[in-house]
Length: 107
Image (cartoon, rainbow, N blue to C red; front, side, top):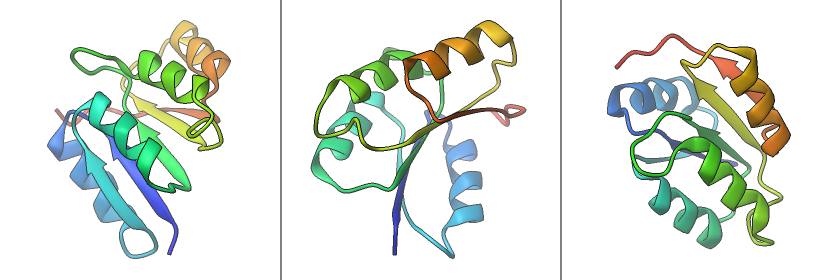
């Protein structure tokens, strides 16, 4: 079974995504960006679903770190965020996200 990691500081949003995907994928949820980076280094994920707006290290910074490391740059990252402006979407795609999905926040 393929592994997906959800990195989102909102337990509600992470649980919602997990409920949608868990019948077909092995899901790991992480609320702290640094912990997500550590897990990405240690495990073989097929995909990362990443929130952008998080305290401390935001999703853009984490995406940049994932892209800079040989051990993690191959993992596709989809940004899922409440930020709907084109500038943030372009920034995320330029940093290496494979997609940028605008989602109404459930926080």
